[in-house]
Image 1 (cartoon, rainbow, N blue to C red):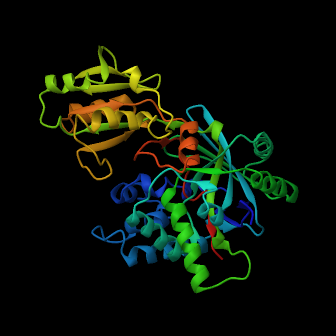
Image 2: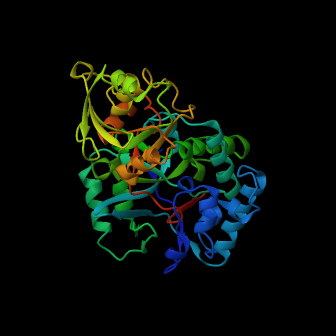
Length: 412
């Protein structure tokens, strides 16, 4: 089986992309989605967050929600705002945010290669979120939320995508958040064959974002093969993905805020921090410029923290992440947080919100202390995945984010 496959994409009709595309389903809560979709009957949020069309107290995991998603997808298709390509295609997808540009490939990615870890993971999944995606995919008979993947250096693929992006786009729209989304259809047989062969030659692809969606796709494939059977390769043997060259992808810092000082006075806390870190007050917000350095904000004061150099060397790809170092030498021993997945004393703030986002959480009194981190690199992510390890929770924040509704993958 091929690592990737072209497919008959379902995408906005010409000139209707601005009416359809929406933020990813998991970056908005139900209230935010209801507000964003107000007055927008064709917004993809009616498919990805269908509880917005039901009473406000509706359980987002109820059967009614998934049924509404299917109903809304059918409604938008019948109205002609979503149309399906007649032949299997690949698609070049470009994102531009604040001058940063990255161009990737929309394709079906092999479930079999996901199952054998050729499509590599770096996070654990949560059963409730996995179950939600399984039920949503099954109800709408489509994968509507793309998995963000990265491919290792492949200049030939970069060149094909760059050439495709010279033509007339099928979609070109700037979303409400200022991110530009542009899509080109790759439908000529030669380019399709070249791309398929180039990806087949790759040793691995890497999940950047979308672990629950890819795990759900694997479960759907097993369910459908068991219950429906199929002769040869079936549509559900692939999952919707957008695959960018790793060297173009941008990871932001993923910062931490803590509710209290674990029963310590500020002076006691600072003394405890100094057991493993050099502590320097800073007159300006601290955005770490290299691994092993951290910013810390409390009581209206920024500090620069530098980890003791003797604690820095580590051949373990997980232990050498700054999110791991901060947890091992400060958050767990000093602040008493050993399970950040479940401990409600810790929260996480994507670097896209800037250091002002950390100050705001502390100045409001909601949090006692905040930490800014040096961003995890793509090389770090790939090293962890190659080692069959997992990162600590909230280690990576990718921007710009894909939009839902640009291309969907129907399972028929």
